[in-house]
Amino acid sequence: MKITKIEALENIAKEIRRGVIEQVYEASSGHPGGSLSCADILAVLYFNQMNIDPKKPDVKERDRFVLSKGHCSPALYATLARKGYFDKELLKGFRKVESTLQGHPDMKKVPGVDMTTGSLGQGLSAAVGMAIGSKLDSAGCRVYCLVGDGEIEEGQIWEAAMSASKNQLDNLCVIIDHNGLQIDGKVEEVAGLIDIKEKFESFGFNVVTVDGHNIEALIHAFDSCKHQKGMPSAIIANTIKGKGVSFMENEAIWHGKAPNKEQYNQAIRELA
Image 1 (spheres, rainbow, N blue to C red):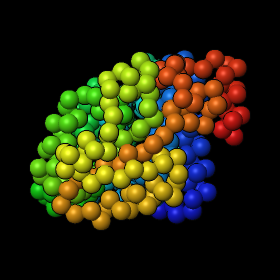
Image 2: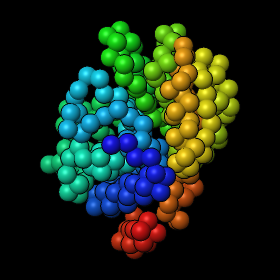
Image 3: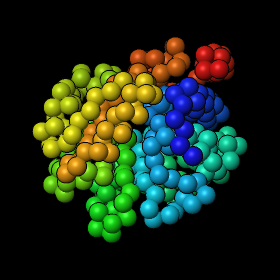
Image 4: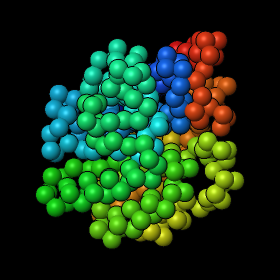
């Protein structure tokens, strides 16, 4: 069922964020920063935009989602559990040896995961292949691929972008989680990555820039991309790393660090 009420989607995003914190805390490891920054994006995709049915996770006509920045699996797992792909109790097993919910999503073990990811840069190539496949067999599905702004330093991203443009994949939407930080610090300082909009436009993409925490704006952005014909789309979602937890916001140290008990309790209170 498509959810259209903004407040309801905002609450789902907050629930996803709580799920992120709970998973990383229980596992004493994981990547909270980038998982928190993409929660609103996932809430809109899974509960307002995508043609999916948890009861039929493998139906051919379903839309596809690729989490190219696979280390942010806590956000995806929390989203899939909330959507009904598996029991929320499984989230407690995140990163544990016996669990199917490992640090990076596995399409062979986790219902609702369309692509196994983890090696940064490769997810977009897989998404391009899915979009081409949908064109060839007239399945009519859309393909969404979430990448990190640090991740797009990878050359394979741009090889995939060239292929997407060449094949006029108007059923492909790339979302850049533009929180400005990566494991080593500020993205601009690590690799000098600037002018992301101009870069994607030069590769033949329709580009939309949006506040990645504004639910209504995200809905409008995704809707507009659906009407774009003859070229792939890229949505640059300006976000805050660690969004929703005051001491994690805009702090690169929380890229891959678990909170202690006191920090966990504070985070849960702030996300209540």
